[in-house]
Length: 429
Figure (spheres, rainbow, N blue to C red):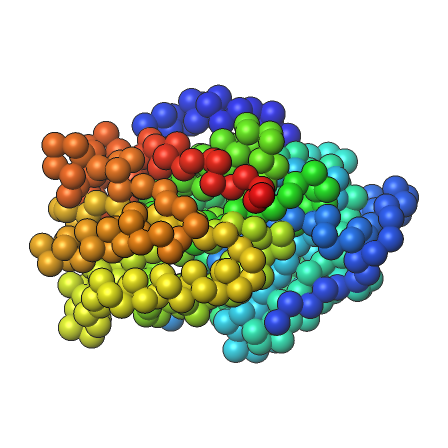
């Protein structure tokens, strides 16, 4: 465990610019461990809260997600939002065309930045209803039993998955924002060493979420969005997407006591699916947001791809501002039906981007006017104002531009997080 603050970490790497429960969920922590160092525990589900997620996507038609894995261990790195005194994980075979079995699964704290090693004494074998293996049918999702592990906030957590048989095409999350690792052949879920993990990857496979026991945490803020939420063009391994910066701000405001989850998918749209970029926000809202353990709030930042994609080819539909707004209203009704507060984020500038066109800018302005003035959202975050160029409000301020005139850089993502009024997330009444 490194103990580095974000500022120290960023400086050091030069980045300044249906759900099935496996096992009981009642009872108390015994504190007893078996010889492998595993300590099983169970607590009321109301004390669990989501601390990390990666929204699942369909595999590509070629490459690693299509090829899958066999007799290999995946060592995947996640970043906690809040900490806790116990942990469980959620696995998903959302888009699998066949069953997949994980023979051994374990979790631990990362030993050091940019390392595949696990901190000594923290490795815990996970079980599923008491069994060390678990099989997910196509579309299936499962929670592990919880284990006793003190998990700090803003800490890299290691999840190891070993599969002896061939997985086939995988459910995954594609955007490269964090380095994980793949072993040579064999089960290395019980080793803390980095040596067997000879291949780097910047994707997550089958890992859908991490939850911690945190009785002091009163809710979860889910950030629903596209690449600008997912963290496209942010520095890899710097944890520099806007939800990462937002999590730091929320943690600093100790009275809020909420976690932050990144439910972004690059290229995602409100209304239409695509092979590369996930099912649309309306279709994935229940799974990726409303089903998150402890969710109380959601920030929606989607729509710029609905506007721009029609310029990418004749097969892409033309979408009106009114249709995007209708999609927002559907999300608002569904959030409110579950007692979840929903915050609208204004669409950020895209003049100069590859799919910019003047009529698209008019649509963006119309959508933003609805977000700002309709009163239908429970609050507004003016991301547009936070990163636009005052001298040309149709474009991103150059110091916040990653270079493609669409996606912010690390500083731009931090400015977006700073624009969020944290009082929006205070307890009601």
